[in-house]
Image (cartoon, rainbow, N blue to C red; front, side, top):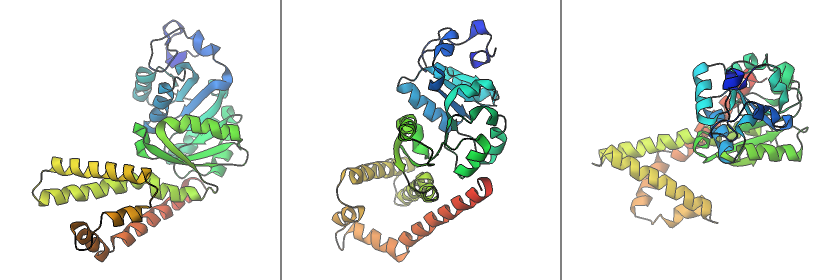
Length: 302
């Protein structure tokens, strides 16, 4: 019998709640099989999801992670007390929900040893580019939810676009929302192709924000401020402006107009941005990301 966290049975972790001190291995065995959540891959996004589940009181013994790298398995055990395995085995068949959190180019390789054990489970993918038909072929399941999260999920401030195949029930949609809730907001889309747009907008979006902040910090140093001062001002401005927009009933365009007096400093800056066609450049960039998302889908998930 394989023991929890790959330790001898008399040394298995005793954790009931993620991050708490351990209890006997038999505790994991007593958890109903339908309550087991399995993660294929234990990297950053999986860790963010597991950490969020821990904070909501999910039992550590109800989470199983298949992770080939020993150092990462050790981190998962130390941080959360969850069960880890280096490779898939029959234990995986106890999972009612399987979360695919590997890099898209590794999906086919990761899925092969899992395929015999996961057909009865709901499949949740947080992989970019792997389409539902490819997941169905690899797992034998038609109950598939694709999620496109973004990196702020790592601090509970992300947003994930979601698409479900017709076989997914309303209750299963609700389960997926519960799993993802600790990482931030969720948004369902009616067509799988819409996830390419979600990827381009919010999936890649944090990089656009960081790029703009970089430029603002560079401008700050050219104007005589320190890089530290520039970064603090830029980050606080983004944080406050987005919070204001989120709480306001007015559109971003109206909010922009309210702080733009003709002949003033903001007006001068916006005129310069318009002269350089920055708005059109941003639209072009987002569409380039959408196209690349579609190409990756053809390459990895077709």
